[in-house]
Length: 184
Image (cartoon, rainbow, N blue to C red; front, side):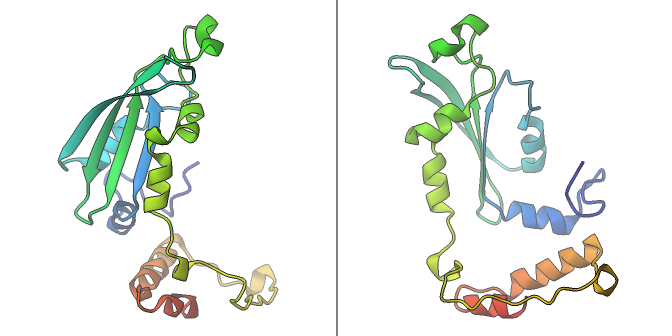
């Protein structure tokens, strides 16, 4: 079931949803022969059309000494200066004897991505971490929420939520991080 609000993904996506999505940095890892979990390739290509694509071929360390994985890294930069990356490993992966009897690993790419820094995930997370001044800390008072019955709750429609989120995004600024929390 799709968790996007309302009718976000008809034939043409909702412009407000697409604008928010293009503002998020994205890195995707996938093995080109993985059919267990579907493939993100066509989705990313469609969302990045007609942006200029930059591609790079890498040979990265595999799970065992002397074994490697060939990876194509594809990058697109949105007009918001946000980059999306697709790391597509050539499979089945032949870098771990554990999978030799199965003809190689077709799915478990995360064993490499989490473990080895040359796969780029650590750098991506460090580059896109939340600045310390915008993080929650124990010094901030805990908000007290009054328990209400379902009948008392004001439930927003998905479109109202998008509008409120957009207003919140606009109210946030690097100079006044606490202003955003005050408006919630």
